[in-house]
Image (cartoon, rainbow, N blue to C red; front, top):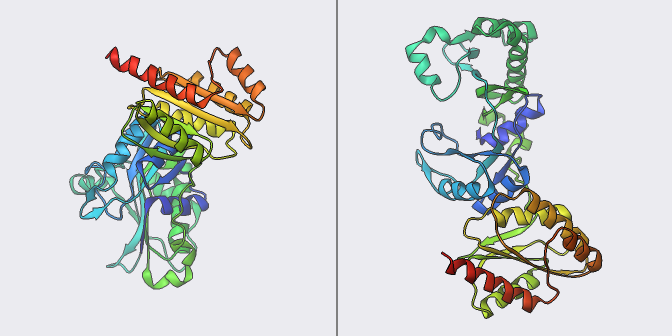
Length: 371
């Protein structure tokens, strides 16, 4: 049984092999949410059980949540060697200094495990095996005795890496072999194993487990989980982003926008107990969604506290790259403190939803009139 990269990486990480921060997305909106939460450029990877996804356009980079949304929409649903992409891995983009290749598999002819390694990793490893086979190192551990760390370091030395990398790369090889043995694998592979400013990291992971041994590893089959969404985000065809704390309040705000001649660009429900962090995340989502010309934030504080909303708004506006007008309706629990914080930050607000909705539509119309 072959496992998706995101599952293989979690298994590798459990065995001490460092990986990049990453989360699974099943929709463009989830990809955008994850990118917004991570606050860094990301790589978006199609999760398929076949090779060659990079050359097929299944691996791309995004500098902000808006780009993540577009790229995820492009990759989801595409076919790579006949396999349809149904989910994505969103990872932090690494600053790669060097790439290596490390794999453990079964040599059927020799009837024993083989470690294959090279100091040149990445998408061209297959071509390297054909054009410069001497750069591919093979080592056959004895399957009847324990594979020791010094043997792994010897493999690293034969790869021709610099002396300061022999020990850390040897450690990665030793841990990968342990994964191979522990999970009855046919193949355990890292390509590329990358050197970054933070050390060695598995930038990709491949794990194929012998089917007949799966009864011993049922936990592996059940590990396809993804990060739960903190907000409910739906793309629409308009240009006014609508955010509310509760589905009913959000829908009412959308109705008010429509009543005044505007068109909602989003339905974004932050829930009844939204924190400062969730407010900030929600605003980052819509502010990075390119069709949005105006943001309408409609909050009637109950469990959600108006001062938390105000702090989230202020924090989001400090870091935003796009200049998008925002209309805020803020009343309810701790409204005086919340309104004071907005005033001190120079951010205007309304207490009437009707007035706020009308104002959002008017501002949007002015922007469109200016072209």
